[in-house]
Amino acid sequence: MTNQLSEKILKLKKEKNAIILAHLYQTPEIQEIADYVGDSYYLSKIARDCKEDLIIFCGVKFMGESAKILSPQKTIILPATNAGCPMADMACVEDLEEMIKLYPDAFKVCYINSSYEVKALCDVSVTSSSALDILKNVENKQILFLPDRNLGSYIAEFFPEKEFILWRGFCPTHHRITAEDIIKAKEEHPNVKVLSHPECSKEVRDLSDYIGSTSGIINYATECEDKEFIIATEEGVLHQLKKKNPDKKFYFPEVMVCPNMKKTSLQDVYDALDGKKEEVILDEEIRKKALTSLENMHKLKEMVLCGE
Ligand code: 13P
Ligand code: SF4
Image (cartoon, rainbow, N blue to C red; front, side, top):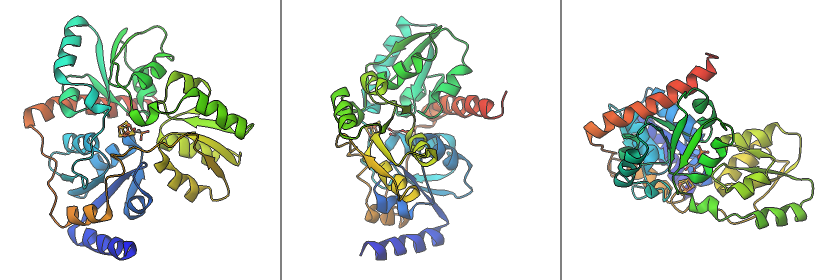
């Protein structure tokens, strides 16, 4: 049944000249029908640069919004129309305006996991895989970082000369995992490296051998000669970890599932292609303001890639 539906999706996708993008936390069947699977930064670049005018974005709300901000001429559809990000919802415009009044000189950096209204008030957006490179290119001393206090405190450790003002947001999925969970997993699997996402708490990060984005974790495990790893991020990454490393073992110390990332079904994707789902619509004035923060993200990250 699933296979039949997958085939119907691929056929309709061709007819509609569409592209399907899937975040690494999506279910295996969604990852399997996608043209591109990756982390937030990678998918945002693909959405910006692809030639197709219809993008089916299997992810959560801020991802669809970000694609629309960068490519307003394209039709962007989030198949799971009610898939949000609780962390993004922890930063609202009113509170941010208050913070800006308190810290008028701060450079405002928002994690891409934020609403487009919040992005419209910020100087630059970052993702977990691009944040360190981007911050290297920011000269301001005072940084207001939102909404993730964990990613913020992780970045701050690399820039002791800067003053970071951190929002109090966090990802409920990554926040679940505790230092005790990691210690227990290390006892059960001695000498096995811990790979964690920067959305984990400092206590968890301090027990980790590698900290990076979803694709960073997958690349590390693939390139490393070790055969076993303890993974501290959402379990969706297991699909690519296993595909790329069929001979390796991966242990998750806690159940880590993002319910919103699991909302996309194959039927939703089919319906999106079939014109039965609403496209992402943004207020044009706010979109234009939010564009600056995403353009700056790509510009400052690409400066590093070009070695400027
Ligand atoms: P990355 O894919 O950029 O690592 O981000 C993880 C995440 O939480 C997306 O919601
Ligand atoms: Fe948001 Fe966390 Fe889910 Fe990512 S994993 S979409 S940060 S709730």
